[in-house]
Length: 309
Ligand code: MLT
Image 1 (cartoon, rainbow, N blue to C red):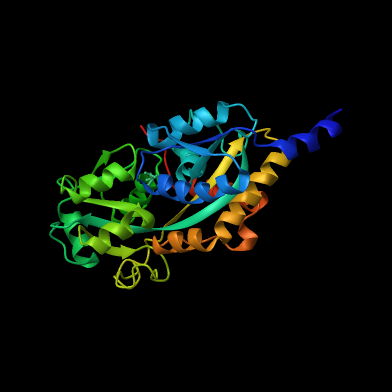
Image 2 (image 1 turned 45 degrees about the vertical axis):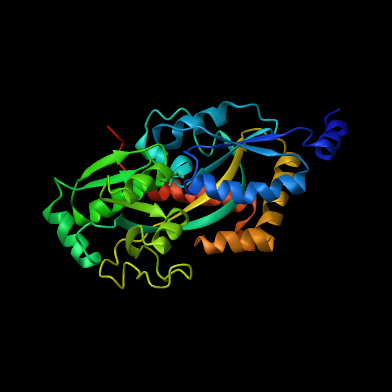
């Protein structure tokens, strides 16, 4: 009976709109990447993909909801390095496990991390920033998108390198955190490039460095952390689509194919590259490659991050 049903399901899916849960506020990197790629996927699949922003607890509220959703292909989530890796060591009572409760669908983008500050933050370059935050660690604050978010984890890494513990200011996503940075209400932030490029180009914030080995073509004037004197700070996040565990292989294959088609589309590619994303190489676009990435990232972050108190 199963073998008779499976092909029919593959031919008919999707018959109605799909909900894509975004675990952070609208306008942030997860939301923007998700909207760019799912806009094209919807055309391929012939059904709309409705973005639902579900915020809270560094993305883990939404990810818990996605883990518990029906595994029928109609509720998906755009997760990332935080929700599907760093959250594991940070939240000992996490209500889901990224590997046990999800089917990986496709990696959408790599997103280098930048050290950013409000426009009038006194340090002029990264060396001055390091000296300033060390000297003023009790006064400065760092915006982030909640414990376990990429912005939180990246700045935790930076702070451990600098051996400081400044105050963190949590937001429901780095979309609102960026608004606060532009408004001068917070001092600095470690954020994904997608959120930073428009503001850096508009001159509304400062960028001290990009935490990758090479400069990014979208920000040719921003030095790497190595060039700017802090080679130990290296950080790149990623965003990817997941479905609840047990979603059928036919649905997974159809979603993966639609995601790959989107990544190969010239308009989608141009938009992602303009915002500084790294488009996954063909070998990194399979569900198996995403499963391996998640496993590797959990192993990487587990010894580094201590449970949040
Ligand atoms: C993060 O810090 O995890 C993300 O940037 C949150 C977001 O997409 O807004």
